[in-house]
Image: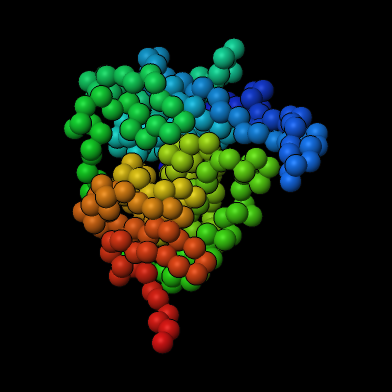
Length: 284
């Protein structure tokens, strides 16, 4: 788990950056106009600064930024163990949020060799990568004896909706959830960026000392390559997405030993790789 001596300041939400705003809008329905109050999600520039050097600016929902810093640092290969994130400080700035991250000198030297990418947008999934070698990183094979009933995975997809606090207001943010077979959802994180939501989820698991391989992940987005990559690096053996995977994502999942499910709905789903972890009740 994260270094117990790390310093964490209040979450961005406490520093004046809300996760959503209430605004007055003009709504039209069946030719009729009405003036109503609506909620819209915020996306805030968040700069990740490692050892006083800016690395990347992400557009993100300003919540759970300690989890985001840890998850991003781990899944992007900046650190190899949660304890290597030595300290995190979060600062409110005039135009966004600054997350100061302290890592060991050797890790920082490796990060310097990668160069910087200061243009991470909401949909950025390979932020910080400047070469093909950095972008296409193959995780070690996932080691977990996890098995789960297909019905439970689909039930988790329904359950996640009730736990999306921001999305219930705005209808415009992604969620990533981690569930334990037989126990349901244990952790949910939301963000305007699907990769950010997954990084926040993984960061939360690592920070609290949970074993990612003991559960499975569900995401309310498509299963792109980098989503599979992050999940496999975390050691999670199964990921279900409500939308489609890409060809590259399928190949990586097959190589990494990850069970990849797409088009997951209450009454249907498609298993693309390693189906042995999913138990089905066969109906004649």
